[in-house]
Amino acid sequence: MSSSISPAKKRAKTEPDNMGETLANGKTSPWFGDQPLEQNDPDIYNIILKEKDRQRRGLELIASENFASKAVLEALGSCLNNKYSEGYPGTRYYGGTKYIDELELLCQKRALEAFGLSPDKWGVNVQPYSGSPANFAIYTALVEPHGRIMGLDLPDGGHLSHGFMTDKRKVSATSIFFESMPYKVDPKSGLINYEQLQVNAKLFHPKLIIAGISCYSRNLDYAKLREIADENNALLLADMAHVSGLVSAGLVANPFEHCDLVSSTTHKTLRGPRAGIIFFRKGVRKVLKDGKEEMYNLEKPINEAVFPGLQGGPHNHAIAGVAVALKQAMQPEFKTYASEVIANARVMAKCLMDRGYDIVTGGTDTHLLLLDLRSKNLDGNRADKVLEEISIACNKNTCPGDKSALRPSGLRFGTPALTSRNLKAEDFEKVVDFIDRGIAIALEIKAASGPLLKEFMATMATEEYQKKLAALRDEVEAFATKFPLPGKDVL
Ligand code: DSN
Image 1: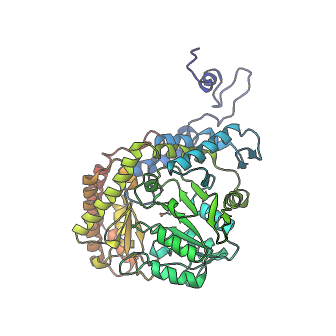
Image 2: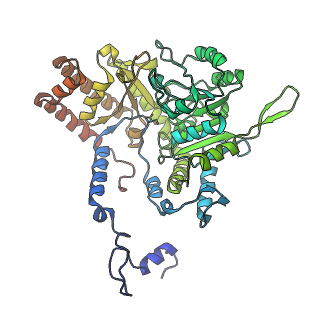
Image 3: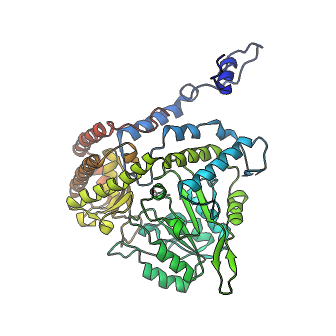
């Protein structure tokens, strides 16, 4: 046998397949072991095929989504899924973790490298299952129960996990177990009102300030947020989930320059698997008046909060996928990709404004833009429903000044996913044309229906509008299918 064949391949040639056949010793092998999904579970196989086809035929403009590469998907579908490894490299609660340790240490190393961080000054935990658990781990590690935190309000572009609550209900667990006072954007400019945050922070005395967004298209002023945090002896956490790929490429404001902690998901602009990550500072926090150094004490509390505080065994297949994505993010091609993501978002914003639409803040510094439909006398709910009918996926979103999160006035668009399908600026002009034509149909339907959303939906379901929408959907799908999906060979 050729020595170029790996041990695993050698074994595969001599070992029987676990497909339920009778073995040489007369026993039957486990029936489920090696059956392909198609054969073993056609129901699930077909659902996956339908979703793959939806992703291929449609225009994916949800700002938080992306297409992971074949290599990332392979790592996710690997045998690493089978392994328990509670603990950290070198100190596990289970045996057989030699290669898992190697994997986690490599992922940590790549995480620091991908963001240009020195291991003397920064540490990283790659075990969080996703962004919300990563944030909750940080709060439980560093803020006492009912301690005070401040994050951008959800209707103003913040994230649920930053402490969202309404007049009626504490929605996020963050607002149940901690006391949360949000900061806001200026309803006219759509820009974060840092001055008001500064005043409120002085009254509220937060333990932690969160600099992070899920729908805000401008760079955050981390230096200003640092100043406000310092005035209150608060920690500053950046949740860079949306922009982490752009940060790694050096194309947007860098949270590491000013923050004590940085959390992120890994599946948005970073283009990895669905997982989370926490970076924390190490070393000297500040030099006190008497010349003594105050040291950071983040590593132990953060690691203990992730495991055993909140999580059990790390998802090693996801950690492998993160490591693959981080390596990809350090290639020169990724920087080109990330700069095209931003350029394409700017093209979308400009083309929409050229067609008379309002874009909140008048443009974007990042991968996302927020279309305000109030001047068109339309709302996000109706526009979103019509765009879905023509195979354009985006999401309804509140705009600055909206009174209710249930009646959002806008649509959030993002370019990471379609840029991964290699759409260029001129293609995004075409995408805007499809959106514009979809919104024109939405306005027609609105004019022909009663005031309620269900009346709008009933009118949209009539033959007249279904025909119009089908014609436009065919055009959208003919256009979208020209662009290959990354990872197209993986289910
Ligand atoms: N759900 C994500 C988003 O759409 O922004 C954030 O977690």
